[in-house]
Length: 210
Image (cartoon, rainbow, N blue to C red; front, side, top):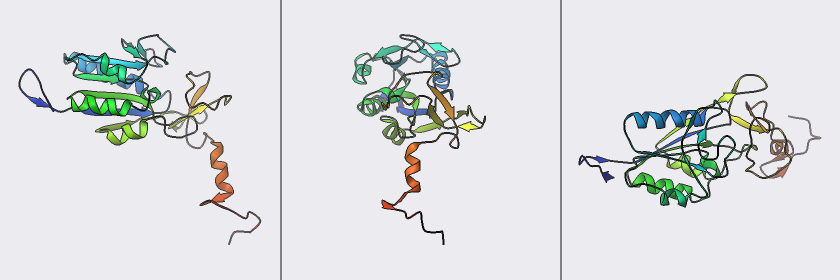
């Protein structure tokens, strides 16, 4: 805990906003930041430099809401750019950061800073994205929000890559590459292997079910 100018102790916290693409994660992060600014709290917003889809520096949502931010090349740069007076740190697209991000976030919270994180919890194959597992485990609160499936219109919790030309986990793109989909309409090739293997042993498909 840290001591504020009024002499009251306050503890830091870690909030994670996660879900698939097009679910409104960045929009929710901006909403929380603006509320903190209304409360006259010193806020700093960071984003990975790799994400320049809408703007080189600003954090911009798919619905065109935006707020001024600082692009950084790695997680340690966040600490270098941090002001002593900062009470709230918001980090967008947190899944793109290096593996040290969870240590940086933990350090910020121990300083008494409220940390707001937004990012994808799964990649296009349905696997945990980057350091998201550690951040979810560390978080004081987690909001997992859903998008709308582009196939059936139901709640979507998956991000589908339309053109799987690259196996890289990180391929920055928009609706030209990605869609939000429900579990039913997001087919992962790894799942097909379960038809032939069970607990690491081949299944004889010639046998009729008992």
